[in-house]
Amino acid sequence: MRSINRVMLGALACTSVMLAIPATASAAEPTDVSFAFDVDGSTVTNTITNNSGSKLRCGTSLAPAPDGVMPPIADVLVNGQTLYSLEDAGQAGVSSQSVTDIPAGTYVALASCVTENVDPTIAWISDYPGLDDHLATLPWTSYIVQQASPVVTIEDSAPTLPDLGSLLGSGSAS
Image (cartoon, rainbow, N blue to C red; front, top):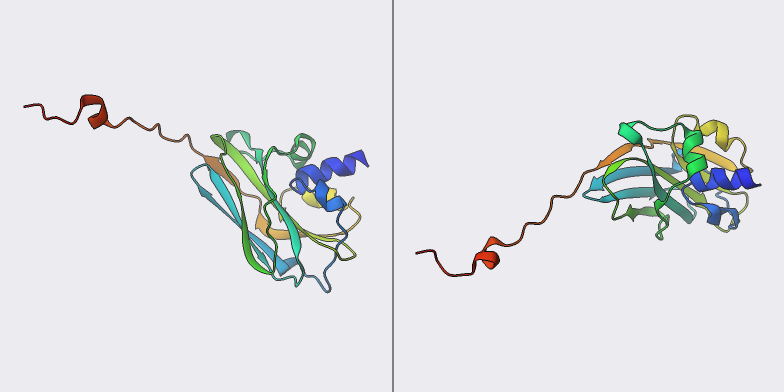
């Protein structure tokens, strides 16, 4: 059970919550859910489109990607992610989640959604090399979303310079 929890925490973006939620969607399809990632400053936003017909519980997380290279999925699963959002998202239609105040660096963005309050549980997870082998060990239907988990770069924010006028006073130099 412990290894399943590690898989859940890593691959499914802090989805230990998902283990406690019964779930399903009738006639679910792999294309029912999609993700679109965007970076703005120190924030990564995941726009989630849910056409499954069910309310979903979603998570968006970031894992380090040193030098812009995606680490092996096993490394991501073992180490987990400390930067994540479990904001309320996943209702029918379009919703979003944002991970904010991200330190400068390169990361791989991961996303997942699972059905709520129906049985059997169905999950949609952003594509990641080698993920399918890990999903095969889980006790529910899992779809790999064609939106791959992208590598994103968060730049150092430019320092804010003091207002020169306030340092020199407001008078003129004449």
